[in-house]
Image 1 (cartoon, rainbow, N blue to C red):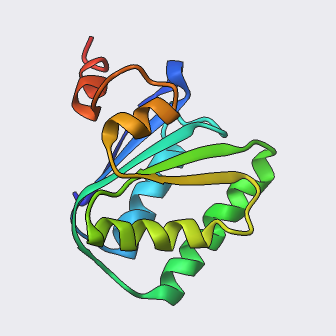
Image 2 (image 1 turned 180 degrees about the vertical axis):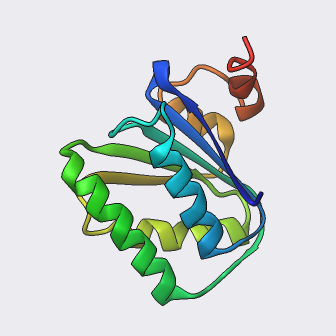
Length: 140
């Protein structure tokens, strides 16, 4: 699947990884699975890895409708969530820019964009050097 997530409930963190061509529907499906997951909690920090994105759907209307639904849910939580996007390529920067712009008027989300995994993980208070090392801690 082009969008996958792993939740670290003890860290208050969800790691989202995009790969290949990302559609709005893929993002919506993953978002719905995330919020219905038993380890979901309002205010979890998010690490969104867009390193492997090769392209994405540019249906801005559908994208903004999806983001509006997410914003409404987040606004009702009363909590703020830090979302850090990893975007080292031109394509991933374009996609992360769409997300960041969509959060402009949403106080419940603080979006940041980084070029490296190490920087992104550090901003989220994680000591691992890369996502693969972080994900390996789930298996323990």
